[in-house]
Amino acid sequence: MTELSSSIIVIIDCQTAGVAGDMFLGALLDLGADVTKVTCAIKRFESAEYGYSNIKVDIKQVMTNGFKATKVSITSDKSSSKNGVQLIDMIDKTVQHIDISSKAKHFATNTIRSLITAEAGLHGGSLHDIHLHEVGLVDTVAEIIGCAVAMDDLGFFNAQICTTPVAVGGGLFKFSHGITSSPSPATLAILQSKNFPIKGGPIEAELATPTGAALLVNLTSESIKFYPEMIPTKIGYGAGDKVFSEIPNIIRITMGKPLEAPLYNDNESVAVLETSIDDVSGEVIGYVFDRLLHDGAKDVSVLPVFTKKNRPAQLIKVISDLKDVQHLAKVLIEETGTLGVRVYYCKRYVLTRDVYLIDLTVSGQKETVKIKCSKNNQGKIIRLKPEFEDLKQLAKKTGLPLRELADLVTAKAQKTLLSDYDGNNKSET
Image 1 (cartoon, one colour):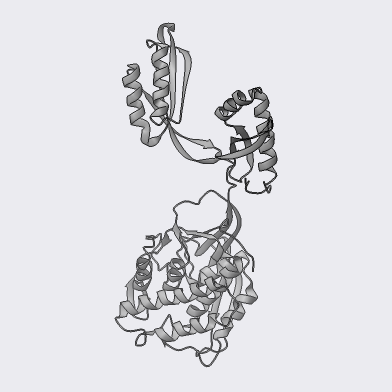
Image 2: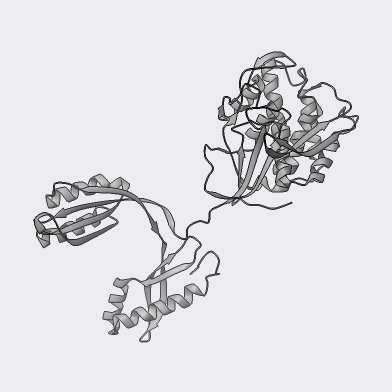
């Protein structure tokens, strides 16, 4: 089995032709799932106990509306109507005799329960009493087991799985209980049970089947309208039985990996406040500078500029958390008398910053100095910088030049911190 991680993204694209169990299984095999494993698992239903004999799994490449896709057809010589408990029992027993992960087993058992529970609720009977015609055919349980095995082989149960809203078609169609509108009552009940998003059309036909719906709601954790930022690595197409002139009757499953994470944190939204003043003394500007920092500004800078009529002025620029924007703008207006404050909202890239205590011996005495350590998202140390106030106190105490002490502290920090850095993801003190 190919082991994947949550760094792998899977997109189930069912917004055009909906979803059915055979289409889903076909797309998984098209992606490269082990055909032998899938076929052997399905053939386990071939027994007198289950009422199926001579199960055939036909897998072939077909062309549908100009697209090449994998089509799967599962049949048996003998089949009979079964009640809900029998179908659940068949899946529960089968997963115990095939070599798949516990996640895959839970997926299979949850899927059949979603399907049977919806059918029983619609027909108003118990799981024992309700006899299911289409659901009792071999392809239903075979598709559920086949998909569980195929997804386990591809590593889906350790991946991030997303789906588009599922197309459910429209119009009327005929099944064992008569004529009904699309989506079928069972399909709609299954999708409703998990608040799964749907879309009507794009043609008048049944596009989402109960088995397909049950597979979807038990597999995906997120619905998307647009593909996320990713690099596609594999694409699988699964074809359905019906042929439509308007659309290719296929489901597409895309496997990929996310774009590499930036080396620096980019999840910090900030605001930049600025105002120009040309009639305020230096003492007032110094006071405003200190008050802005005291009241929560992340950074303050004062720049010389020229304003209208070539007047020399000062541009006060403040970086602020979003929650502090109004308060800091009020401080600027009240303290400087400016007539307006401009505000820009943006993201900023920042390094992760930690503070470590570094012990070193200076003039025969053991001293401790704080050092700021900046790292990227992979834990790699980018910069080491001693705390200036600590260096200043140490310089006064020892009589040594501050510059020389800074070199000593940095060298000791490099030896202490960088020696523990494993080159991959983190540093330790």
